[in-house]
Image (cartoon, rainbow, N blue to C red):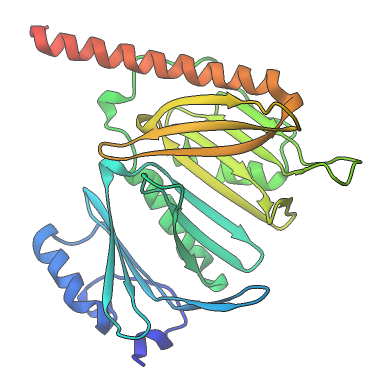
Length: 304
């Protein structure tokens, strides 16, 4: 077993000498073709225990370049390096989750309902935050595309759980929300009914922000998942209502250059008027962006 599997701490890669030995060759290949990475971070192997099984998560090296992300992972038996590569134009969103001692970053590669997760040890929370801050900035739209269609008046979101407000205040890269939908945690009297976690969907000039404390189908007092989707990826948002039962869905369609993805958030059916009001705000914003893109495209074509 190599020494890399024995590492216990996450750390930033500031130069070639910081790269663990099993990753050195692949790292050098990327640096030769792409130059020095904008951001590089190592995460150690982790053991995750479930109810019935225990499994190992491999050590990983995260490399971010101008046009793509590369996540290098080791295979446990062979120490072979496997590479997950995601183009910037197909970066559909990212997530930041922290529940008790478990933390992870999620990437959304598209063409699948599965997300690519990078887990962190509990003591690496600062590095975890650094990665999320970087991804939010890295995914930023080009200034010329952010945009003639101005949002309505910004709203202060009052009455949120403190952990929700702390995220919105702690990540200015998300942008200030100007329209939102909030579903409070609910436990219905009928034991056969669904339990509902706190859920916030907010629009900012950067994209859609989703905050949820759902963990194992219930609301978690000690955890929160933050998900961000850039405006350029959002194709449309739909309300899907069941014929029976209380579990409706807000569904978001995301589109990259070469991939697509659908994501769903369960919503209590009786909150339909509030959800539809929020969806109409998303539609208004997307229509404004498309009009601006068509106008600038026509202007370029005619030489205006």
